[in-house]
Length: 172
Image (cartoon, rainbow, N blue to C red; front, side, top):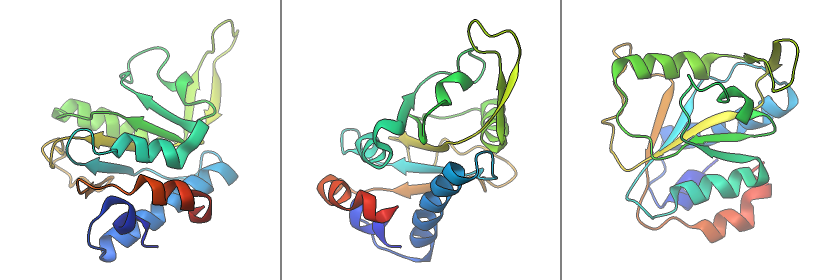
């Protein structure tokens, strides 16, 4: 699966092929088996305005969500409903406690909340995967245990959005 190299204009290697394949496998598995284990985040690093968020929007289509809400916001988990890709846009440097909080949040298989006007708290199996776009290069990774959940891809200044639009369905 070599879509990352084609779309983001970078050299393919075992890492980029694995990240690209696993990102799509994770999306498909979460659709078929909500709540299944998928605790990684695709991180697109590159200059502002090159199309990082647009590329995620093309992949996710109507099921893409770009959010800046923090996980302590009461509506944070409710916004995931009906979404396939949840993008933490303009991800900037996270301090150690925020990194731990993010790790715990992305590792959860179900979201527990009370919907507006709901009477009871419900468990909702997670159907989305996570991505992040950032203008920084690795400075946001502050996990002393190794950052195994974060898969950064440094993108070029020439993202091929047209190729992605044309081939999106085939990638699934």
